[in-house]
Length: 195
Image 1: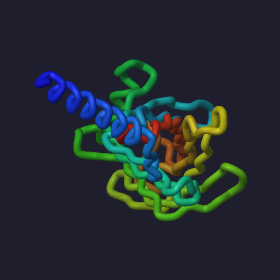
Image 2: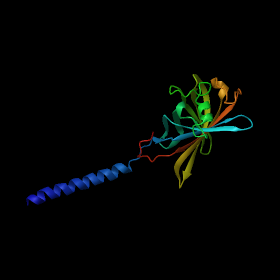
Image 3: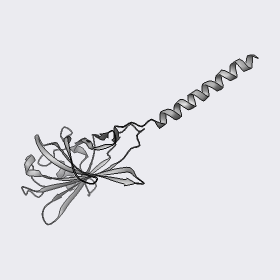
Image 4: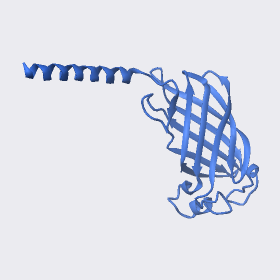
């Protein structure tokens, strides 16, 4: 009899805990967040490109209530993570020099969405402020969700920046060079914590 008094409440507690866990895993957070890992860049010199990448110091991309017209992107890249395709060689050193992006650990490339425009079917423009080299400028990035089996798997975000708008010259010392950005943003499941 004593054993029954212990076993029955224990079994009931395990069943309730199992149901609670199952129900909690089915609740979907409507403010979806994603985690960015690496951003890709290319600076065009007209006849060639300097290709480099960076890691995000901070990043959030999300939307509310499954409404992509509320898409928001905010990121910060510490310039010490800029790395050319020379594995930390001369080109990387040039990118992180004080004449370029100043990779001293105190400088960042930042973007924060202010508003969103629908450009077409699954094509959005994110207008926001980019901060770079002590300048804040309005920038427009384009975002496209990539679906698989009807579910967003990732976003592709791209845009371009005129480096002279931010007081920078290209590594070849030419003024007015364009930096292209391409961000492939993996989608996290709703139960993940995001950035």
